[in-house]
Image 1 (cartoon, rainbow, N blue to C red):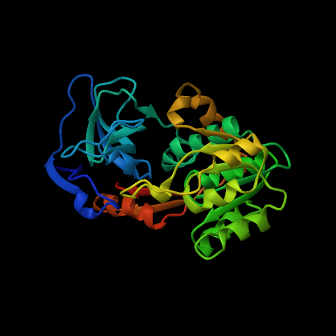
Image 2: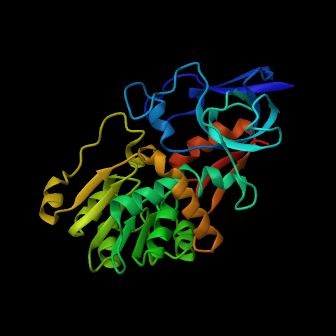
Image 3: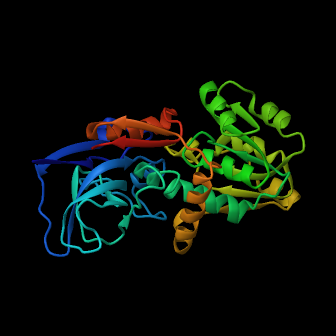
Length: 331
């Protein structure tokens, strides 16, 4: 049996390419005492991983050149020397991009069978869903009748944010990059959805939010965020989750400075990382699972087949190729 690993071959300048990744083949390792051997089932590709390809300090250590890329993985235990992870159990964890990997069990979580497909623990019931849950409910705290705007609304986080806001009784507006994504957002309950590639964003947002914006969940940054800031109501709340519009910029973009608008509206702008809420993750998973089982939450997955397609699926994030959670099915 052969193992395959995807390593960071070089750090990208601007938008990553396939040349920044390298495949290596080796023998499948055997689990030693205190270890499990894991067979990768699904690999998560996420926008935040772009930042880890750069050198320099951030909220998480950068990937090392000539070392495996690491991210969210759902895997099956195929050999075990750990009682808590018997052979046949399915786990989720932060693992290398490999067909087979060894683990000492630290950071692994067994996935319960029954409540949802195992892949959902990389999406709705995993990091993206928890990002939506804590960012919206803790930072934005939407109230019934308020207006919530979500950028990147057809992504893994954004579509959950919008549905959570609807559960809380808010009016929800989303932006997305195609007419198909706009139609999907309306299917899952968004009151308004705007194709930012074809619409005049300031005019479209002003028309969709005639009473202003009370909560903004920002996944994108850039021109969409500039337009939202012009519509903020008094005491608006902004959860700063992502800035995918600038992740591949070689130089920091210069745009409107928002401080004056935040000052005049007494608005709150708070950046956050989902790991800030790590002690509360079990609470979040429990509530998200309940709402999913009650039919109050839907999700969409863009699943690419094949281990060798992982880099292409990752690069597709920056072209808007995915609706919902982007995953690669390996086995």
